[in-house]
Every structure is written in C-alpha cells, then in structure tokens.
Length: 515
Image (cartoon, one colour):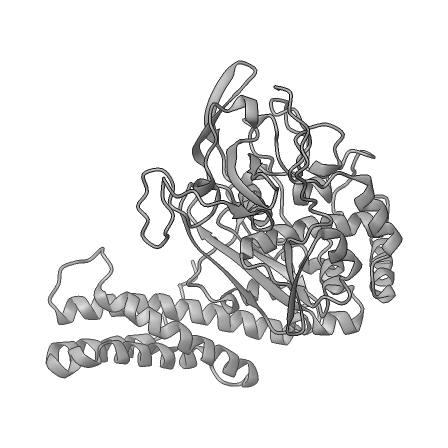
C-alpha cells in the first residue's frame, strides 16, 4: 500500500454524534459511547433508515455482551439468566466498563490505517472508486435514469459523515450481490460479490421501555456445544485485518462474529477536506469464500424436511413491504416444535426468563428491507407490536393457539379469495386467461387484508366466534366492493360474484384417510 500523508480529519464512531435517538418527544444524535452511558435515559433508536437501525442493534448488542460479561460461554444457562437479570436490575450500564471498552479499541471512521468497519487496502486494490451515488441508497448511478432524485452521473453531492456511517452499516448487512467494483488480490482480479447476510430479510428485535432494557433483552444466549477460548472477535477488536483469501472459520463464534463479522462486502469511505462529509466510496467484495451457514437470532426460519444437510434451514419469510406484521404472529408466539417446519427467532427463547416487569412491557420492533436476492432495493419498513409476550405458548397456550388459528384462517381465506376472484372474472368476462392474474384479484386482496386485520383483533377478544366465517365475511365484503361497478352493468358479473361468495363460505372437504 502506498504511503499516506498524515491526516487531521477524524470522525470517531464512539465519540462523534451520528446515531439518532429519541427520549420522549426530544430527538438527538449521539456516538456509541454516549449511547451506552445514557441508555437508561434513551427511549429508543430513531435512525431514519430501518436497515441501518437493524444493523446497529446487532452491533450494540455485541458491545452490550462485552461490557456486561454476558459473552462468557462458560456460564450455564441459569447463571447467564441470573447475570442478565442482575444487569437489568442495576438500571444502567456501568460507566467504568463502558469507558474501558471504548478506550480499548479504535473507532475512527476516517483513520487512514484502520478505519472503522472498512478496508483501506481497496485504495490500492481497486482501479477506481465505486462512486458516492452508488454508495447512497436511492440515488441513480451510472446510466440509470434519475426518476425521483436530483442526483445523476455529473452531480455527485457529498454526504454528511454521520449519515455515511449509517449507510456503511446498510451495505455491510444488506449489500447487493452480482458484479461490483473489481478488486485485485494476490494477482487475481474479480468483481463478483455475494449478498449481505441480512439481504431481503425481516428482523424481530425486543423493544424495552428504555434502550438499556432493549439491548439487554436483545442479547442472544450461547447455544453451541463449545467455543474455543479467546477466538470470538468483532471486526474492530481484531489485531489485524482478516486475510480475505483465508479459509473461513470452522464455525461462527458467538456473539461477536455471529452479530458483526459476517459481512460479504469491503468498503472504504473517501472523506472531504474537513472530515464532515464523505465525497466518494469504494465498494467491493470482502471474501471469495462461501458464506458460512449460521442462524441469526432475530430472524424466523423455515425448516425443509427433505434436506438433511446444514443448508436445510432457510429464512421463513422474505421481507415484503405489503405484508402486515400481525400475519407472522403465530410464528413468533408458538414454542419450537421438533416436528414443525417453522422456527421463531431464537431470541424469543430467552425472553421468558426476563424479570416480570420487563417481560410484561416488552414489545417487538420489526425491521424489514424488501429486496430481491441480487441488486434491486424496493422498500424498507418498520413496525412496533403491542406487548405480546404474555401471549406466547409458554405463558398462555390457549391464546397462542387461538392466534395461530386466526393467522392460518386469514391466509387460507386469502388463497380461496384469490381463486374465486379469478374464476369470477373469467366467467363474467368469458375470458380464457387461466394463468395470469385477473384485474379483480389484486384489487380484491388489497381490500381484504385491512378488513382481515380488523377481524383478527376482534376474534382475539371473542374466542367463541368461528374464525372461518369471520374471515369469509371480510373476503366477501372485499369482493363485492371491488366488483360493485361491474355487477351493476353486467348480469353475468353479478351471477359470477354471487357464486364466488358462496364458494368462500364453503369449507374444503377433509382429505379421505387411506383404508
């Protein structure tokens, strides 16, 4: 690497403000050190980009485990739970432990030798930078048209460094796959890069009354059989940068590498003259080795029984901006079942051991990023559930199974509605289109789901009301609203819709048992 001139521009992720937080109706920006020192006074994170907040929570949880001693794999489950309860009872993080941790490591985002969460070797190993527009989500880059942005190939406006650090996290966790900026390492040049570990996923994070509670509730427990001592390290804790061509570790260590060390992207920010802005960026691959197979504690999973290898575990739901969070409540509340195909996020398995006041008020923060598997970013979203841990199967099995029944009936009714709406259109319009979606399908489903949500919450208060009939009522109302004009103009449409409504209330016949 070519020698660098001394730099006076600095931006410490620990001590410069870049993290948006909320306390009551007051908003502020803080660095990581202040975030932990004042965590008991802060209500919640307030980052404008949900994927950046999801990434930051994982980093902050890893730091939480370090400064509280919850990263000790030698602790038994009961010892670990007792330690976490005692840390919660203290009401705040130990200031001495916070200062000791942040004083021990380098946090300078603009350091020319060891920039935080960056790879300075890109400066020499890439022939050109990637560009600031490709770095900032939402900006058009290259030959892409500027539909909704004033930026273009010739308007490369810098980004405030505080915002650039948040975007840096998005690339590490949700970065794109495909062809990126070529990088030459050990004589070989490649531009192939794989997607980030959280790409197109939806995360479920415990949300306490204060950030202090949120972080401690979010620490995942050690579930492995063993872990070699002194092997787990976050990227900023390593003495030297990881060898990009070295074989991957035998397994993903807990909690540092599990939460912070799985990035597939190497990034380098180029600061402006005074360090307050970032004017350019390099984005390339971080490793050409296969992705390690691991389980993220904040993701729900689906088990594919037919597959017997380690890759049989897959994410249960891809992030979908059009999908309401309540539709996944059954997955979140039902306890793990060795014969089931769905697995709730592993973090839920530790929440029942929290102190009663914390557990009773704990909500769930949902962070999703609707993306394809390669390069298209569609929409990010966030939501907050009401306190729902008292509904888990461990605490209220009747309520949990009622919720599961309602979620199941809502989905099954939606499938029947999709089928009958398509058949009604084809019948009314004498259409032979049997494969493509008809105009009534999407419009009807769009009307159905808000009605289904209202029905869902009503059914939880009325345990004796039959769920199939209630959701069929919502589906029938949605179909009638969508087809109101067509039914008024065409007798054939009125007859077709009337038949479709009858079909919605008709229960499918149970499969015959083999004799």
